[in-house]
Image (cartoon, one colour):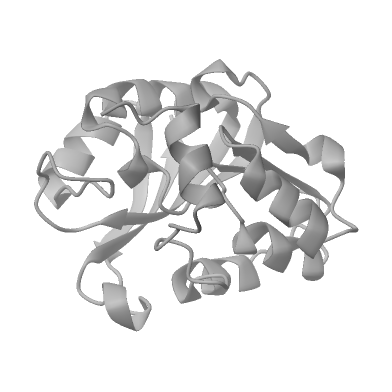
Length: 193
């Protein structure tokens, strides 16, 4: 199965977006709540309807970009958040993006990619971060199988993937996951080496 632009457009057109919980997830919200620098340049890749972006903009953050291969979720954001700058709604393949950021928020994008792209993801995230930039978010903690998305993984696999290019600041079982994901997520903060 190709997880390409058409695949994701079809999901949004048919409202098959089970990953979209309709609000910012608690772990991401609590991380955002402790950020003091509202000028951070932030990217949410594979952002979908991006309730994270809405929460950020509603809390005074000024430089947020949402990137998605599908056009429909970006249109949804335009409708839902009319004050969101449309130039920061980027309809592009993540692997073709070249702008750099201080912070990248990972919320269900990594797990939606084919596992064969994981090394490419790490390399690309690294290239998109400014010096001392951070990748922050959630990774699923369940067995990696060929069924997906979402695709799972485990602590050892993730550390092996990220260790060479990132300093692992925080990587722990998520204590404040939403109920359906309790016990199935890691929260992490990785800083670019």
